[in-house]
Every structure is written in structure tokens, then in C-alpha cells.
Image (cartoon, rainbow, N blue to C red; front, side):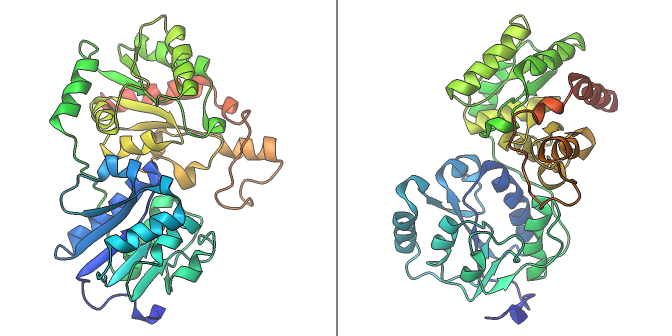
Length: 354
């Protein structure tokens, strides 16, 4: 079917979303799916997703999730998906991940309309696996780009609603972990990419500032040795006055912790977008990546942005002319963010909250 089939003349009966990862991008995708649900309440939505990411959103009851084991390898995963979807047909496939692994999975999904990214965003030859493309400026936030899929189908307006289920047990674990803290700040200091991480001594300085302002401080993160070491250094810098939950929370408990926080401090990482999903403001720390493309979507006001300076100093280029999505993969980039800038944004946030 050609691109002239869009926008759709009627709501589809069955729609398939293909977005495996990563956790932050799954949060972005969910906002688009929620918009489609509101606009087409009778459409059956199936979402092909990674196993880790299913741990975050896979219990949403109104969506059918088909979980892919990425560790099995792309060809084995495609064969397994073909067995799961045998005999099924969808009206539309939204191929929302420009990666070859995802495109191999897209091949086994039967749908006459196969909507993917436009050429500037269609990495890894994604256009070979689709027959329709989104339109619009490509120099925009990732979430704005994903909303182009809904617009291509004829759905206008946006429902910035996530409603990720948080089980009572997860909320209870979060309550116990923060008992006695009063209002608290969450510091989620690490990204999976080390070049995006701010210095632990600077996080500690922000934590001490938060403590002086009467906030409790909670440190979160994964179980890797690098994340534990980062958290330990922050904890030591507070004189042990923070609660360190690094490596001790699952995704649902982390959501509950973020939901109860006054704010979150984080670099470009999944938890920054979790904060948005649960309605908590995020002080995003951006120098290695462009916040205009990847910041916490509803927290532009609180974002600390040193990306243009990093591009000029460390890449020797004009930030207005570099390829959209360019990353400054240099540990000196995040060092351009001063403690004072983050404390100032935290003070402004607390003032606005009061």
C-alpha cells in the first residue's frame, strides 16, 4: 500500500506497535499509544517490546504485549515472533524503532500499512522495511517525532498521559525506604553510557544543598559495580546522610520512589523519563546530548543545558550546524555543568512548588 493510503479513512481494527527499547523511548512511545487509545477506543493494540521494557509497562491491561527476548539474537527472535503471530494480520504496523534488529522483526508482521521514519531518521535502512513514512521536521524532540506516527494516521492532538501501573507492593517498598525523610529529592546519577554521567562530588554538593533546604535525599541506580561506586562516593560526600538504594529497586519500586519525590536529578537516562511519566519534575543534566532532542519532555524549565558549549569547546563545531542527535562522547562535557547551576534550578523549582 502506498503512502496515499494515509491518513486512514476509518479507525483500524488491529494496530501493531513495534518498539523494543530503550526504557526512556518506551516511555515516549507510551504517550503516543495512549493518544491512539483515546482517539480510537475500539482499536485492538498489540505492542512488540523487549523483555526488560515489558517489566516497566507490560502490565497495562488495555494493551496486548508480545515480549521479545533480545538476548536470543535477531534471527532467533524473528522466528519466535513469527510463531507467536502466525495467522494474525494487522491493519497497520507502526515501525517505531530505526534499528536493523527491529526491522527483522517487522518483516514477520503482516500489515498492509507499514509506517516508519522519514529518511533523516530512518537509520539502518529502515525504509526498506516500510511502505509509508512520517513527515515533519526531523530536528525535534524524540517524543515529537514519535507523535508524527499518530499524525500520519490522521490523529491530531496529544494525550500526555502515561498511567503506568504501580502495584501496591511497590508503593509499600518505596514508603518503607523513605520513611521519616519527609519531602525528598531523588538523585539518579548514572546513565548506561558513562560519558553522560556527572561527577559524583558534584552530585554530593547538590545533595548537601538539598539537605540544607530540608529535603531528604535518595540515591538510586542499577546494580553494576560502576553505579554502586558512583553512589558510594555521593553517599560519602553527604556524610552518610542520604538513603542509598542503588541496586535495590526493581522498575516498579523505582517508579513509586519517583512518584513520591519532590524532584529528580538525572543525566540523560531512562529514570529521567520515568519522572515525567509519574508527574515529577526532573532536573535534567545535559552536556553530552542535546536536550532539545532528549530532555525530560515536561521539564524544559528545569533542564541545565551545557550542550552548545560542549559542542563548541570539545568538537570545535557550531551547535546549530552539527547533525541532529550528535553526542559529545567526551567525559569533559559533563564537567562543564557547574554545581551552582543545578542548585539554582533546584531552588527555583522549590520556590515554584511553594
